[in-house]
Structure formats: C-alpha cells, structure tokens
Image (cartoon, rainbow, N blue to C red; front, side, top):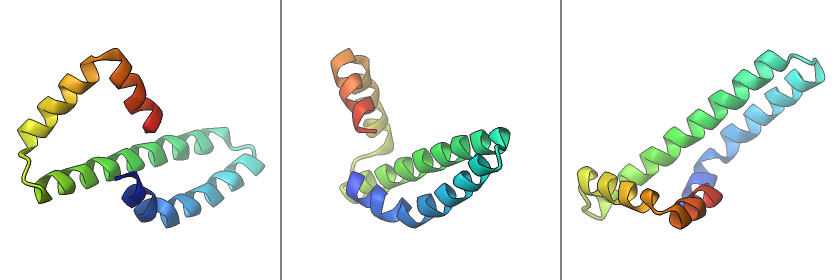
Length: 86
C-alpha cells in the first residue's frame, strides 16, 4: 500500500516542498507551519482513501476493517510498528 501512496503523492509532495522552502527562505514560519499541517492532513486523507479502495476491492466491509484496525491499535507493540511505518 505504501508503494501506491508514494506513487500517487509524489508530484503533489514535491510541489508543496518547493512552496515550503520559499516560506522558510522568507522566514514566514506561520505559513510554513500551516502548509506542513495541511500537507500531513492531505497525505493522511489520501492514505485513508487508498485503504478504503483496497478493502472494497477485496470485499472487506468498512465496519470489519475499522474494527480490525481498532483491535490492532490496542496492542502497544503493534501500534508502535504501525506508527513507525507511517
């Protein structure tokens, strides 16, 4: 899944990085911080949508997927692994 996320987001992330660099050069920290947060949220939304599409394609209902994720995230070592991969 990470392969598809990277492939889909590559161009947009490159564009946003260029804008962030300009904000950093101009020392506009408020805009830089705002763009960082927007980019992070956008990437998370894209990842969520890719997951939804994947689970729909393999026939897993959304409720089952959400319950599995919640159970998985309740285990500290699995949660740490998940967060590292993100």
